[in-house]
Length: 186
Image (cartoon, rainbow, N blue to C red):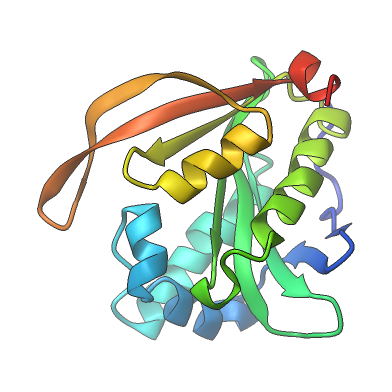
């Protein structure tokens, strides 16, 4: 299984998936305080720019440096502004598995952008770092996200009842996965 080494910038027809830096703190703060984005992620956004900087370091920069995860910032080709992120976290090298996460500015919803980004991220995971299993854990009410991963070939494995707590409510999460042998068939 390959270690990350240099940050792997990925490219699709419409996107550049690049390394996130502390220069992205204003995007991170604004993005994760957008009610529509946070609803899909089921965690509260940072309350201050300083808190956003700490989260950006903890969730987007350190995992790569420590070789335990990776988070790409999504930029439209020809642009410079971040519009979302995709990530691998809970990377268990010995088991060759990781969990995938993603989020997108609602302005760009329904345009196939996350589908395009995830195809590149899945390919990287299976072909470059040797993952055998990629899982997604999604709020059961996030039907758009559930449909998205189904289109990419993910299979539902089960439901974690009342696994998340957000906005004063317990929520069920759906566990889905995609195996390397299923990916190679697509």
